[in-house]
Image (cartoon, rainbow, N blue to C red; front, side):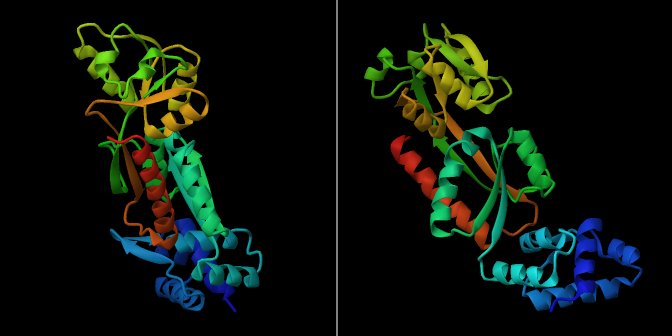
Length: 301
């Protein structure tokens, strides 16, 4: 059986963020707290904390175990079973924060693929703007983040960046659909549904349009690609979007053609600094990569 005192030490270290803080609250020595944590790790077969930059950092397994522990010690037998299931990969809780272009499209696809193979997989998926994704991952509230690349990635590790082609989306019946591909040379004298200036795509479009002798008219802007798609579907203009939104646009009755230009839609995958991925996150990223490959095949560079 698991020790109630060891669970108390685990719970207190998580709350205070340090062994010294837990020792003070529990009125014991720091070595005593460390021994209790080691005993819990031995009995559960899980590594619960690592040291990084002079601090003690909970592992993903520790956060999973804490879900049961923090429910007012629901019972040692339930916690022991949870630890057993985590060790065998039967119970996983992965928290992901992502920008809307991915959270509403490819990430649910990847999750569906993973759940078909691993029915016990559990995931929390939150949609938010890039700066909030970074903050959430940096605060270790999410284990993975999918966002636009930025120079202000503090307290996170970059797993990798991915470059994907832009796709031109059109309303039904648009004459540009007769072309095999569309470039910026086709944009003058056209009305465009633009992106907000504070988005990566909005900034790119502003720069490119500024180079044109005759720039297109921007009828309306939005910070969300799904809204841009909805506006294009209603005949308010044409636009450039990521390949994930483009596929959804076509599924809703719109048209899309490959974009002929060097500009790329870039995304970054991040994690909390110093945190290992573990088998569950690796499995999810593998499912994500497989889904991304299907989009690049549909919209080649």
